[in-house]
Image 1 (cartoon, rainbow, N blue to C red):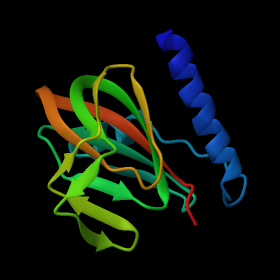
Image 2: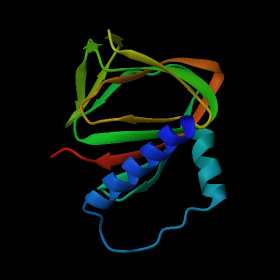
Image 3: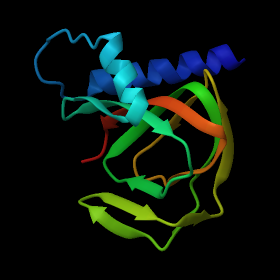
Amino acid sequence: MRFLLNAAALCAAAFLLSAADTPGKEVIFIGSQQVNAGFAKGGTLLNKGAYQILTSHRVQPGEVEVHNLDTDIMYVIEGSATIVTGGTVVDGKTTAPNEIRGKSINGGQTHHLTKGDILVVPEGVPHWYKQIDNKLVNYYVVKVRTGK
């Protein structure tokens, strides 16, 4: 069942990427050294406007995030964490155009993410890494511009 859910999420990601206006038809290679360096600190590996690829490295909980234009597709490669999605943002503030940050979430749905899990958070849905287990979680984020 987990395999089918992961496969469905990857198909959804492929669909979203194919539906986005991507510039050109260039093939992009990102070597393992650059990827590993990204996970050491977290950061953006690639930003093509319609989509981005990020390496995320968390050692502690973060702020609530709401991306009004971007869908986040997260794939955990190491560690585990508890993330809350949906609900209502507490003390939300606009930090950039179409980006909101907050202190916590009231309500929402709790997910425990472990290695190999994929979570797709549509645009406009609050999400919050509430707890990091064993002091580490590394995960890829593919951000796809789905809003207008």
